[in-house]
Amino acid sequence: MSASVLYDAPGPKARIRNRVYSVIGTLAVIGLIAFVVMRLNDKGQFAPEMWDIFNYAGVRNDIISGLLTTLQVFAVAAVLSLALGVVLAVGRLSDHKWVRLFTTGFIELFRAVPLLITIYALWVLFLTYKNDLGFTGDGTEFWALVVGLTIYNGSVQAEVLRAGINSVPKGQSEAAYALGMRKTQVMVTILIPQGVRAMLPTIISQLVVTLKDTSLGYVITYQELLYKVQHIAEVTVVNDESPYVQVIIVGGVIYVALCMALSALATWIERRGRRAKTGIAVAPAEQPVAAGDALDVVDHAEVAGPVDTSKKN
Amino acid sequence: MNLLFDYFPEFRDGFLGTLSLTAASAALALILGIIMAGFRVSPIPPLRAFGTAWVTLLRNTPLTLLFLITFFVMPQILFPGTSPYKLAVGALGCYTSTFICEAVRSGIGTVPIGQAEAARSLGMTFFQTLRMIILPQATRTVIPPLSSIFIALTKNSAIAGAFSVTELFSVSKLLSDKGYPIGWIFLWIAVAYLVITFSISGLFRLLERRMEVSR
Image 1 (tube, rainbow over the protein chains, first blue to last red):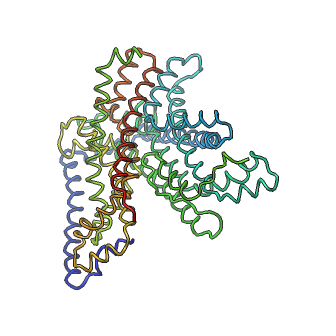
Image 2 (image 1 turned 45 degrees about the vertical axis):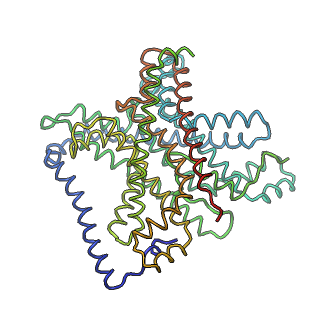
Image 3 (image 1 turned 180 degrees about the horizontal axis):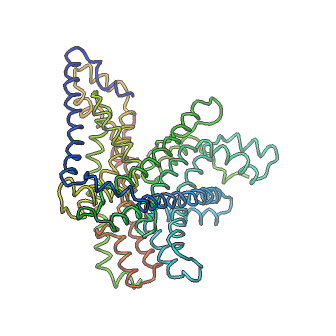
């Protein structure tokens, strides 16, 4: 139902009333923003000296290196989590019971435990065996973060992929078997490509979650964007104050811009997929991936096309 | 086994901390989320724009960043000296409210058009239609996604532990600083989270069955 069903097409009186409400609403929103800006101004947060810090090459280099670190973690974790996702999804649809049991347990455990707890546990573990594992510098934090993100997002991506594979019409795999393809061939050449296509927007939405979660490196003192900007504020003193507000605004805008760009890509692919008349329906990008929870997508897709490849041979 | 019993008070405090943090921010998120959903379907353009901006911005903000904002920027604007617990509830509540808003909005979309049309032809205003006709009927479709949103909220509340709020993550940090094997700590913390998330999904399944009506 479109929103306009909820209210009548406004008549002359209602149009005036709506206009009055519009003005009040606009004023309220503007007032809120003005209040925030004024309060920050009163505290001297908009003093030119406070913002002058960004003119120093050191501060700029710190922000850039933080940004590159964040992107690096994201790139490695994204690739690894997609790879793990494929492995786990195939494992969960396997014909062998023990493989199914193991992957299901793995997925359910790491999806239920907060990512931060996993990353922290890995960090402590890696610190303990630092020398045996041969980590140098901040390699410990890097790998704790990457492995944690991979395990968690891999589990979620596995569920997304499984939903995608299940949404492929049964006829596809039946036809492939009839052509004499083997199990692996059917999975690799028929089911996974179509499943990925159907789930591409959801997969990218989950990548946005991965990008957002790289900020958890802040907690394990990894030198990513947020930690770097917070560190800048800690060591700088301007007007007897640390410029926390300024660095958080700058760092935050960079982070939010990155995430929004990636979200926009997901929406674009979804719209592109919907335009195509052939193939199976593309899942919406804006499903409630409530911080990496693919439960709804999975439930939805299972209703849409339950093809249990695990029982077929 | 020993670890749990030796440090039972810590584990209990952490468990209760996570529980109360989740409950408080869930309540805040519900209220904010429903208000924002109302904004997003309202006939007044600036409110619609505000709702959309709220959802798009907060959805694309990492929760850690939101925590930094509430802990370092918020006290500059209002209420300096608020306790970390309240600030954490604020951050978690605002973040989760965007997901609730979207769930409620799609729930509103599932109510048959005839309901709203009938309400309008009875002369009900927008607010009356929403409050008495649409939202009560939308509840049924909103409950399943709410369950997974609250489970995600429980998991997200772990970040508050890094900002000096007592809950399960801070317990795990405390014990590992004392030198206990991380494997066992991880296991017990995981069990504690599993208890909470399973209770939430059980509770919601019960609620779902209660409200089930054949349509």
